[in-house]
Image 1 (cartoon, one colour):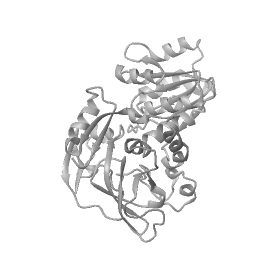
Image 2 (cartoon, rainbow, N blue to C red):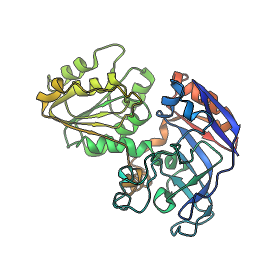
Image 3 (cartoon, rainbow, N blue to C red):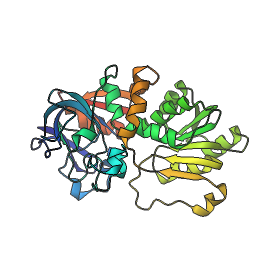
Amino acid sequence: MRALVYRGHRRIEVERVPDAETPGPDGALVRTTRFAICGSDLHGYHGPVNEERIGRAMGHECIGEVVSVGPEVRRFRAGDRVLVSAVVGCGRCEACAALLTARCPNREGRVLGAPGLDAAQAEAIGVPAADSSLLRIPEGVSDEQAVLLTDILPTGYKGARGAGIQPGGAVAVVGAGPVGQMAIETAFLFGPSRVFAIDQAAYRLAEAERLGAIPIDASEVDPVEAVLDQTGGRGCAHVVEAAGPQATVRIAFGVLAHGGTLSQVGATADPEMTVNLMAVFGKDLTYRVGLVSPQFAWPELVPLLREGKLHPERVFTHRLPMSEGPRGYSVFDERRDGVIKVLLDPAG
């Protein structure tokens, strides 16, 4: 089968790899029909070169059709159209039973593509713990919406939910990329008085403004001063950090009001990431940070999609065949052509 394979610094190739298989008695083999490039896929793409990853497939966001299932799978059968959670647990522990898959203690690498787990940017994927890792694509949910349910829509929602947004509260979302767009859109579900969107890309801010957010262009103004100026010096009681780098985390703490809640869902690959506790100690804040459990969000997000209250598929600005996957990575990485998110078709 074909897959998008990591070959080093900014090098993704379409290659033939061994066919995926059903991974054990509780697993399923899924033929992919769509997959996407996530911002966190760029961590390895940028480098430094990860020798351990060279020759391995990429990605963790996909949907498809079940080809076969192991004898212990109860909820799915061949022919089912499914989306695959980007985060996979053992399916048997207390955390998995509570839909908090990211807390599973029995799987060290939980994100698809981690050691021991198939990646999503391939023509097929073996999915362990299928009964807890898959969701049959619901009636009324489009394929593009289903791809987003695998990761970034639940991630953005986790950010907004974790920020404890109250009706009438002021919200800031730091980073208006794909995850930030999801956080902005779902933040409005909680009835805030206003939502600030902070980014350096004008086209991303324009998309956030279309949702009703107040754009703050960090390439033109100091975003902390701008938010403080527009909130009478108080800052925002609810802040979502949706990018991950040290600089955006500092901005998030800077715009956070005293007694506020900062919810960080932006992933970082920087092992030296630090938080200046002395600078934030006096704010008496709540800080939440962690990997998403997509399964936990599905029961709340699916009805909103079916009722037309969310339209996250707008973030797909580029739709390409798999054969153009390397170009998709390049465009996404370099933020060319107004790209927000890239969707790929494995049939092409």
